[in-house]
Length: 187
Image 1: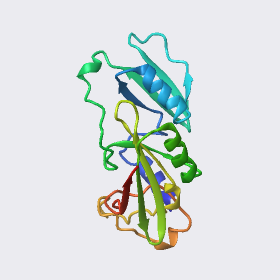
Image 2: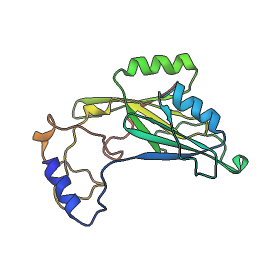
Image 3: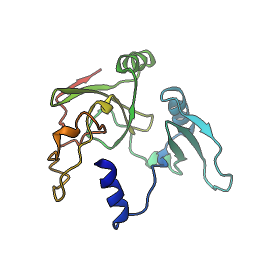
């Protein structure tokens, strides 16, 4: 059913996209961010075109690229965020072991917020933390949640699920409105 919906979407007026290629992050220090994305998140530096006239670095892993861009005026960038707010803009990574991720964050001295959401008896654990510039990172086991297409005409913000029978067959990320942060712990 999801495949049919995606094929229909591609045939419509939407742009003919194939996948997410990369995200770009403006940095106060490319070196600090490079260290973080390599040593905390496991990204690998890759060749960056030499024709760029600005400093930066490219990394890749998990099927997505991270493009770090050195700010021309680092002092003009907002101060790194102190408060970790799970509702801030962020990128999310799936993991195999939440316990191991939490243990490693503690060992590295990285502050994080722990959260758990529940939908229909399914529990999803989340850990949120910042990179050196305050960009939010989430690590979760969100693949436990089902992907259930909305019925035609249902507004996406209401997240009215269209077919409960699909629950055991599909999985993806939840929407924030349907899965409010039920339990949040700052560590």
